[in-house]
Length: 269
Image 1: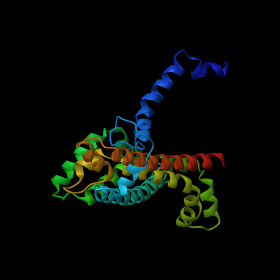
Image 2 (image 1 turned 180 degrees about the horizontal axis):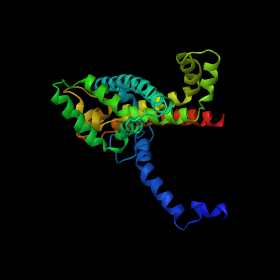
Image 3 (image 1 turned 90 degrees about the vertical axis):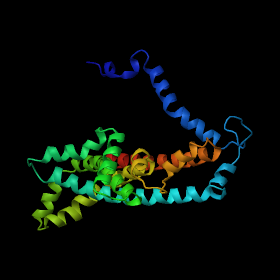
Image 4 (image 1 turned 30 degrees about the vertical axis):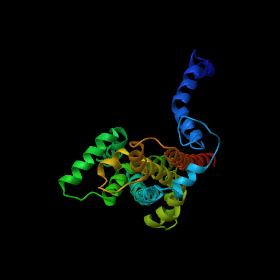
């Protein structure tokens, strides 16, 4: 059989559908980015290129609120991604390196479940759980919810990397009188480093950008950057909101690109 038969580009309409999907996905982001440089206070009239709204984010009347929200977002994202990555690494080791056991598939299903459950369901369930145990909502509830939600996102690249590492490396180390712990820390863990970094970056960006779960479990007066943006948009879309959204988009793009580059570099070795 000719391999060209499986080339999707030869099918009628493929190019048009691809372009349409790209426009639907990225045209709104492009519009927000362009208008964040608009000198006009109006979001519909173009009066030239200016950085005034980026300066307004840091020095304007609402700068204090956005700075606090950004600090909350980054602190929560760093801690949540770090804890989720540690749990995901240990989970991948248990599932992929502990041999066969009865609850292996069940463990994998439980880790993957948050990826398949709608985020709104996870948010409502988490809120009900915190209310049921009498846990006061605040930064801690956001952090705990983000850790639980980020684990499967960190697990996927870590597990994918571990599956590409043959067990013979650890067996050879133990044949040379290394303990299981030494084989893990000195052999397996360094080989898994690209997957661990990719998992951390992915979990970080998922936590940083999350709105639905955060909005449900945050306490009164507690804001992260996505919830602060949402609260500001309810009062009307302002150019400084577009500037903040563009900067947040830029951070997301950088993190995702780094994760992709690390994974790609690892595959080429």
